[in-house]
Image (cartoon, rainbow, N blue to C red; front, side, top):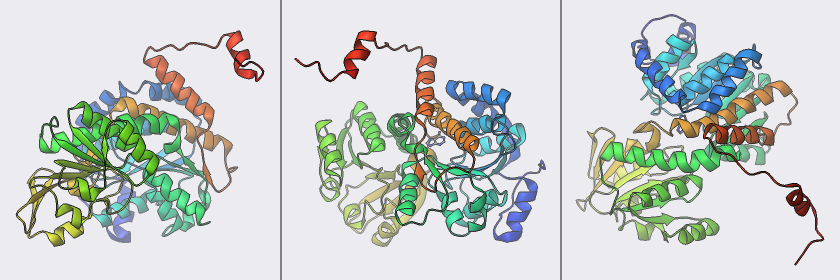
Amino acid sequence: MSKTKSTAKPSGPSGVQEMIKRGHDVRDLSLAPQGKNRILWADRDMPVLQIIRERFEKEKPLKGRRMSACLHVTAETANLMRTLKAGGAEITLVASNPLSTQDDVAASLVSDFGIRVFSIKGEDRDTYYAHLDAALQFEPTITMDDGADLVHALHTSHREFAGNIIASLEETTTGVIRLRALEKHGELILPVFAVNDAETKHLFDNRYGTGQSTLDGIIRATDVLIAGRTVIVAGYGMCGKGFASRAKGHGADVIVTEINPIRALEARMDGFRVMPMAQAAPLGDIFCTVTGNIHVIRPEHFAKMKDGAIVCNSGHFDVELDLPGLAKLAKRVEKNVVPFIDRYTLPSGSRIMVIAEGRLVNLAAAHGHPASVMDMSFATQALTCEYALKKGKKFAVAVHDVPQRVEEFVAVTKLATMGCKMDKLTAEQKEYLATWTMGT
Ligand code: ADE
């Protein structure tokens, strides 16, 4: 890889070829020392991944394999990439969101760890897709996605590379929804693993990770006190649950909006008010969408909001807030009135503050989930990757679950690294659980 500073804007096929030849497209390689410190800092809190990395180093289970990963380029992801590389894989990493890249981490991955990275924070749409294109030009045998953009490209613009792929691994709820839709329509062309659906992933990452990092993003961008505010949480899946409970913990009055009756009931019994967005709109001080769906907050809702309402999204794609609709409604739009905040003034005089252009607030305005929770998600990814490559081309074209033994290893090892011990079943208890004859 060359050691030049990248200023290239790689649109068009020649731009992509140039970038591929260079082996990277990052903001500035001189940021590497700071990035390395951050990668190593995160690594302290990723003991399960460290244990896997040490074994991979010795056994090289991924030797000679090419992996292209489309993930948020963070310090935690860097430690997953180091682990896969230690296992012998040749890695290419691109961003799964134009705003989530940590440029110093990207620089360090290239300079200090010999990993190809094509990712720049704030990259435009063309550059984002040029980077995806580059990731596939390396003809990977396994891919990893956070949101299914690589798999989407393998089904549309780059079908020629799909035949090489043993499996693709998916990190997030939105990606798994896309994959299941492909499967349901009979259009899936390669085996995929729903890593998001592993309990060692979504019970912890989605709940505690999104809960904390979303609040962190809102606070970093706005400096508001959460206590005493009315916070509207749209969606009560694992991410919504996590965020609602953290906001409540900070003293907010939390209202949940839902479309699923079981989740709505769960939110109510967890102590939150539940109502439609149309009713919540005039009550909220802070709004956050975490639904995975499109246009959850629309112009008719923005029009009813209080002056100064803060609005953001922590779902994967920037479609949950209808910002084009808000822009049409507004008489004035001021970009970046303070970093990350765009102010929309409505004809009524009310001002709506939108954080990070409606992109995921936890990665755009903060650093994403803390390392200790990404440790579990990425340990699950690394071991599923090993499992898939060991088996080779034997999987049916379908959405597969992570093997149970991977989940068990991650949970048992994480507990051990946290100094927790469990009880064991006695012989009598085992027998009791196995019988159907014992009653009252
Ligand atoms: N998704 C959410 N937080 C993340 C992080 N810190 N690194 C990678 N992906 C993430």
